[in-house]
Amino acid sequence: MGLQEEFEEYAEKAKSLPDSTTNESKLVLYGLYKQATVGSVNTGRPGIFNLKDRAKWDAWKAVEGKSKDEAMTDYIAKVKQLLEEAAASTS
Image 1 (spheres, rainbow, N blue to C red):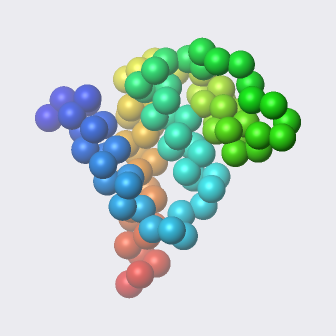
Image 2: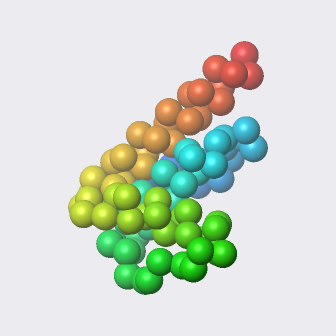
């Protein structure tokens, strides 16, 4: 399986992460996903009163400069880690 296929598989698996997944972890995944699929940030930073979108933008900006392959690899690793943590907490 190629990196792109594995990335897409883990993007689907990420949708099944438990509600207990921290916002910080979700933001890391968001930033890596955007970097892998869009590339570096291509929009202005949202305004101060738009906290949710601003946090998402900051998460994306934090991984700026990673190559598409690096972002995909890091995304897959993060989803695997979160799934393992979720499995461990339910057993």
